[in-house]
Image (cartoon, rainbow over all chains, first blue to last red; front, side, top):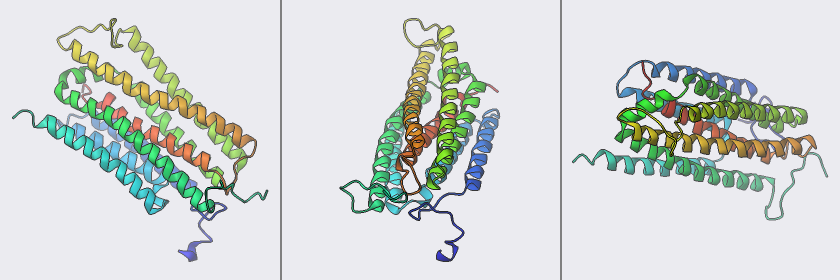
Length: 105
Length: 215
């Protein structure tokens, strides 16, 4: 990576600085996905409407976390913390929802 | 004091260790926030599953145009926040102030639009409680939908009010030149908070406004 060092903007301590062009591209992506999710909600997909809405929201959240929140350029310990947060959220959601979904027995 | 040197608190060995600690501490706080909002989303999901028709009716009472405009406003505010951090990283002191002010303005526009929406709901007696009025067989469950709507959007709005307060302090700190290319942690950490609040809305918007939309 050192051969690219002169081309990559950094702060005074040498940390990676995300270029403005990438921020604008992510912003454009978030806007496009917002339009797609509104458009998809107006089409009747049956039970797939929920899936599509949540997939698009998840994709938008991932873009914000990786680029706006710089996680993509962060150290492994930040990845572990972020991953742990969503792992515990997944446990909360999965166990509770599987309980309610299986009460028809 | 050298311009390029970061201020290192005495418990840290060097600026890098301080930087890592600040970042991990902020993420711990955000994980707690994920669990807090996660509980609300879980409750909403369970009752939406139990009362799909009432929640569909409730969703259709919301103003899709105002909700959509607010989604755009909030995403733009995340961009201006990211650009404030960018300006801080490069030590562009005036640009930090202006991007922070832009973020405050957009956050205030969001809250203003939210206030208009709340006003309409109050006018139509859709605020849960003794004055709630809704005709139809699902009235009680529709009231439950609006309980979730007001608690979830209300907690989100409260986070934005707090965020705007923090941003106002940052504007003052940036204006007196506290931040430079080697020290901008408060701007960066507030950015993490602001983007987190944006992510909460990214999920609230489809779940509250879009699911069950009449076609």
